[in-house]
Image 1 (cartoon, rainbow, N blue to C red):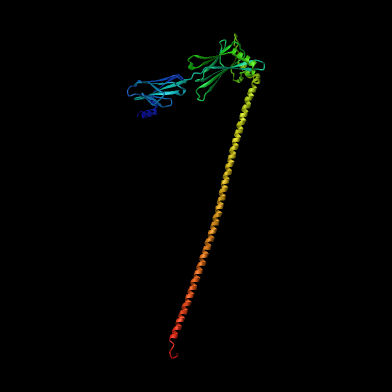
Image 2 (cartoon, rainbow, N blue to C red):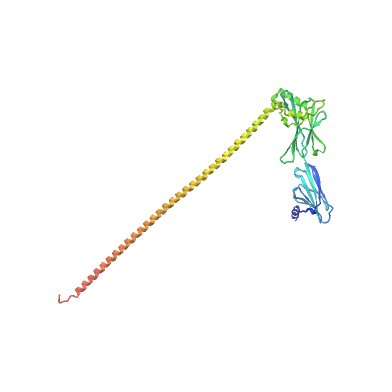
Length: 393
């Protein structure tokens, strides 16, 4: 009975004239417990119902709609229905609805927003060497699986905080994203330190900080100069850098203007150093494109060959059918002529047989007639001899 009522109420057609909408927004972090309260002043023959964002019933009064559901009943009375959603995920995000059924129908909508706090940031450094002997350091700070995208800034050694070039890449679900921020450093001191700072709504005013010390980079460079084949520094695309700074110990750090950014981005010295990598990428892309075109041409050729083979098969089948029909016609003609000859021979045999029979019957009849005549003549002679007079004897 309750299942029928639940299914009916889950699809109950509600008209705007009988609804009093109340909208509420709740923000909860991923993994926490979501609590939903629905309170009404109607006590006479009133029923309360919670609906999930998918439109299905969660609870009707104290009766759950699903068995083994993750939704938990927190409190139920004539005027209140409260439920819990433990271990909230991004799939639990959406608009929950509470309906009050009495003489009139009213509803309350609760918009639930689920936050995914970013993971601890990671700072990576790479060196770009120019022809004039100067080295530029590209710092990249990255964090993963956050919703909404975080804000990334860089704190320099003198307390100056700047923003770098930020890039957001969303995952396949379209909700969580991976964020990176990049800055370029021209000069630095061995004891200088740069901090990557992550700000996010789910951190509640706190920050995630990842420091980078340039003394580690200097030590790595000295090791790389001794053993260049073991160098772990990689060239970075200068076009990805949208913020260029100079970090110097115990000195002021002026921000570079737009013209300097463009000059650094378009400096041919970078392209000379990094061009072998780009050429390799271009060659790889052209090889991939050529392989794709060859594969496509082979596929088209295969389809054409298959169609030609199918056409040959059809022509062979038609030719075979025509030969079978002609052979069958010839055999039927031969059998028909043989049957006609046989029937004509049988007719001729029957005619000759009947003629022989008639001749034999005619001959027998003539012989019998001649014998009868002889008998008659013989009897007549005997009678004449009997009547001869004795006187004459």
